[in-house]
Image (cartoon, protein in one colour):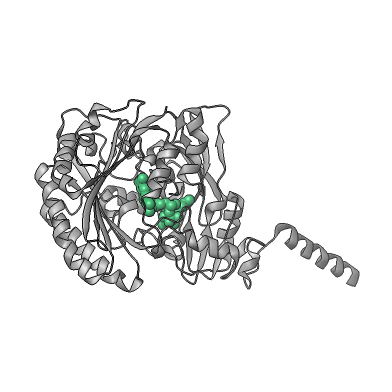
Length: 489
Ligand SMILES: Cc1cc2nc3c(=O)[nH]c(=O)nc-3n(C[C@H](O)[C@H](O)[C@H](O)COP(=O)(O)OP(=O)(O)OC[C@H]3O[C@@H](n4cnc5c(N)ncnc54)[C@H](O)[C@@H]3O)c2cc1C
């Protein structure tokens, strides 16, 4: 009998080792060798890789799965062990504190899921691990004259970008990045792995396109790889004397009767508090190999210019260039609105932003304040309900609306409340003057004190709540993964 028990115990130990089953008294056992505590190299690298200081909280553990199966093991352990504070991160670009990092909790770092595979059967499809960066994908596809709807800045992660919507160089033609997803591999709250697409788990598939981290962890995206040759673009910078001409060129572009689906433009006005100077920049692209495209001439003709990098190149090169303009290692807040286009609105919002800067700069040392105008991508032609963003299929936000982004950067966390209060007041004033309180707010640009999911409309919100109850009945992604814009269930 004793011998029998010895054999049984030996088998049990062997089985536990083979399956690497976690024990709840030791988080390190969840994924042996892939759970990191403070002051280890991996932990420090992971924290410092968050783009803004606002994202650099201090979790007790960082878990770094490298496969969907490992993400599933992590979520089973989160349930079995009643771990109650978890965050999920891909590229780490969230500006809102705690959205992708769990202070004193467990952060699941997906950067190890970064495989990029071209489909052998279908040249129009590429599979991308959710932890890959936009530039990694461009690096693979540019030489093949193919591209995906990724971010315009190199290090933005595909995980947050695609689940929040995604505005790319090519969005005026192809729509939001999420509309180019053909399939998502998803780890659900209970650790089950499913493939979500138009025919398998279609409600989950749609919910994830705009619903971000409310339903599961996307571990792989299968995206359309569009044919795309090198194209014309770059950045042109102007001193503040150009502001009036800039605003007028933007109005002209938006009010033009003809919509050109090859134009991608971010017009940004900048106030450098440290130097008390204003300037502006256009990141602009014409997504054909056409130099000096006439659609962008109203902007390229504006003088004086302080620099001009317009050239024909590929998405990787452009995204790397734009990465170089970003203010890193700062605290940051983004806030957003979408406003009906009019020349008056464009001029007045710019004025309101300028009027708000002196007060803020008097309170916050060396703050940088920027505002950006750009277009909203068109909804999917066939059926707008393919995503959760709430646009009707006959809506034309790409023509009628302007997407406004306020972004602010500062060096000391003690100023975070003052900045957020000022940006929230400015955003509210602009909305009251020109916007509808329910108008679309782009989730990936929204401040924590905004409610982008409510802006998708009541019908969309109702569906998102139902999908959450269906796929996550115990509310792991509402209560345990508490960072991000939640559904309030
Ligand atoms: C410098 C800079 C440039 C930007 N450029 C663009 C741009 O060109 N176009 C544009 O549209 N937006 C842009 N953005 C906004 C960007 O899309 C969002 O910040 C986006 O959420 C970042 O994704 P991430 O994976 O890097 O961020 P993370 O901080 O890792 O994640 C953001 C949110 O998404 C959730 N999430 C991440 N991965 C997953 C996943 N696999 N499954 C489920 N939920 C997940 C996280 O839990 C978190 O709540 C930019 C932001 C910055 C800071």
